[in-house]
Amino acid sequence: MRKYNPLYYLLFVLIITGAFSSMALNTYGIKLIGFSCLGFALTFFHEVVFGIKKRDDLEPWNRKTLSFELILLSILSILFFLRSLLISFPFAEEVFILCVLFLIGNYVYVGQKSVRELWIIHKVPAYGLMFYYSSLILFSVTFIVGILFPDKGAAMAVLGFLLLGVYLVIGLINRRMIINGEDYSLFTFTLNLKNKTTIVFVAIVMIFSFYTFRDADLIPGMYSGDTPTGYLRLIQEAETGQVDQENKVDRYLEFKSQYEQFIEKYDN
Image (cartoon, rainbow, N blue to C red; front, top):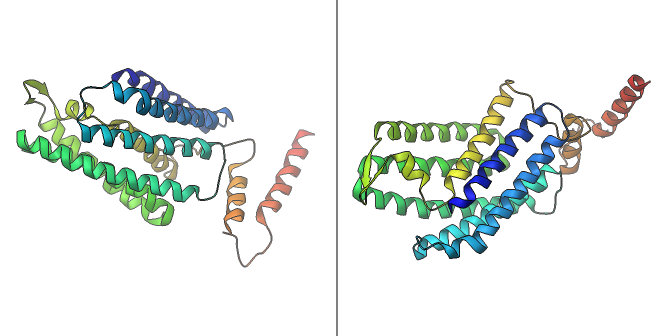
């Protein structure tokens, strides 16, 4: 429902604000991102419980797929919230992967149905919509690949951006089409889809753009707390068993000791 859109816009603004604050080494930045993710989770949940039943523009299949999508997005938003606060629990990655897989299946079903309906009216924009969903699905797969095979995720993200670029080109070429007597462009048609793919796309592009710019040293990384990010990385390596087998010394303990000596020296 459109009444939720201003809240979604506000939450995105808060996430962007939190990201820049975190890159500026402010400790509240990552917390602002986390609580914005919690805001998304609560908004998605409110919409699935109270919003969908008030809509009379949804077909039965669309009502089910939208409800399923909102539930999955609520769970994923909570996982991002917990991650931002460095809160972990057993099988968190497995739950994340499972939710993304269900989301991919949902988008495959909804995507092919939407493309078929548009194909009957306008074939070229239907190709654009196909590239739109293909890009979204590929980006979603990239999240899973990034967890299981970190070295292969970047290549898939590039392919996702290429598919998104094809969608944009088709949208710019076909700026006008008549559907049920109303004037649409491919972009306005996409924005009026009865799902949350636009929100998901904005979030995905933000995430991958951040990692791309960070890896290219164009922007700094995010600061996640009062301790150096390198120290937290060493702790995570120790917790997951990813330690240097040739050097059995816990590097994060050595790092902590040297860091405390550094702070004590310059505090005095």
